[in-house]
Length: 400
Ligand SMILES: C[S@@+](CC[C@H](N)C(=O)[O-])C[C@H]1O[C@@H](n2cnc3c(N)ncnc32)[C@H](O)[C@@H]1O
Image 1 (tube, rainbow, N blue to C red):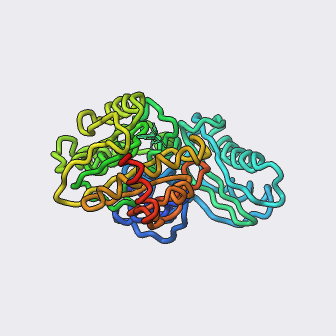
Image 2: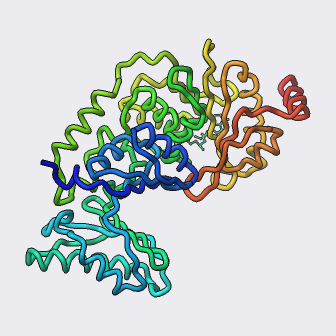
Image 3: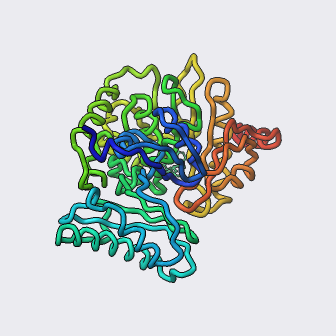
């Protein structure tokens, strides 16, 4: 007999950071789901709550997996409450449990969006108190059952947030770098380079090593949430642990920790503290000894010979967060020379929040689109090459 978890399919909305929706859509399709709609920061598909478990386990570029409970029209807070109180909350929220409500609200009758969350809480609590004579607690902690309200104009959608804390926190980042990148973004960048997991992957300027660790996990087919112990779906009244045990067993079976990867993954940084951080993070990620970590200036970093084209992905410091743009020009020039020198056997990529510094340094490249690291808009520059003038200038400088 099927329970609520593998019962009714519904619309599932999966969120991600702005700019990587396209990579998320690819992942969703690869897992066998149909993509009904996608934007730069979300993808819509259809499935059951049990499918949400699989999506939570396997998606590398996602942040949250939202299962739609209802969509309805609501002009004001009373309309909202009246529709919400009809939802059979007893199926989802435990009368003695705890839940939180997050929201996106743009409705002219609502001056403080917290009021909309309060209406959701009231509807859930009133319904459960009516049924059981007891009521759940609610608050802002996201480590138990989570609901999400999306209400724009008079269109409201209420979701079960099956994830809780964002999927981008994998749990391996013990040591932070100066400008740590979210794990989900790092995974999207590895995918954006087209790396196939079988050729060398070099990550100079590695900081805390996030990009190299995500590359290794892709090569090993390691599900990103393999060791995560808490998801919001585990706190639902209808949770069926046996279904999760199966999702987990499948992920354990697919993971190939001892697979001999026919390539090298190298992470290097000029700052020894960053290399230490990468080593510590790699150990926490079960990647100890699988990533070569080196202290090196980008210009001197190791480039093993390769028969199949490899990938070099560099995430240099950028102006507004990490220093004076003009002082960084020479660093970018070094990156340009380094990538150009190795272009016969490696595809080069620069991920930066200051593409103008690359331009000032005389680098020309294909622009592979806009991504967001926090609030900073960044670009992925592919196949960078130096203008003839810049090349002549840097060669002259290095021969002095
Ligand atoms: C934007 S951070 C990289 C952040 C990284 N993606 C992460 O998620 O942690 C840039 C890194 O470049 C390093 N760096 C700066 N100049 C360098 C150089 N000339 N050669 C090698 N690394 C350099 C810094 O130490 C810093 O760790």
